[in-house]
Amino acid sequence: MNLIYPGSFDPITYGHIDIVKRSAVLADTLYIAVLINHSKKPMFSIEERVELIRQATSDLANVVVITFEGLLVNVFQSYPIDAIVKGLRAISDFEYEFQMAQINREMDLRAETLFMMTNPEWGYLSSSLVREIHSLGGGVEQFAPPHVVAAMNRKLEER
Ligand code: COA
Image (tube, rainbow, N blue to C red):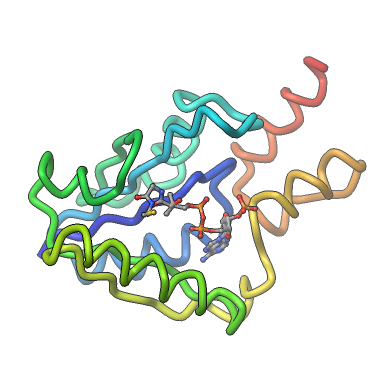
């Protein structure tokens, strides 16, 4: 079974890595699909996000990092994927994820979504919160791996 874990990953955090590690155990191949979203102004370019994910998952032989634009269901036609995997952090995630899962199946019956409960340790985490804490001078070492924190520090220095 091949799974796809989609997201913005701007940047990847320990919360994402928890879902990746646990999904990779279940999958033959786990595709991490990074959304190219022209309407958002991300902290990291698509190439930078891919590289940060690659480094964070270099110990997982069955993980493949890809990028996509447009609809997630279209990726099903380009890769041998059996299901989408998403992490659920809180009840507040449920309604939106429920809607997305249903719409995706409406568009392509094969597009099943499997939900994994996020480790409670990371239940409050989101990439935008990590970016905000970092931009206000807070430490983010407990939320993301050292190479991600270093990349965030470099971004801040560039500004
Ligand atoms: N640990 C830590 N953070 C997590 C997490 C976890 N387990 N799960 C989710 N998050 C965070 C994400 O980092 C993100 O944070 P941010 O908003 O601060 O960046 C937030 O929670 C929301 O996560 P998610 O719902 O996965 O959003 P996303 O922007 O990362 O990804 C896509 C959304 C890419 C899955 C979705 O927009 C998509 O499929 N787009 C393609 C278009 C499409 O097909 N749409 C559906 C039909 S309309």
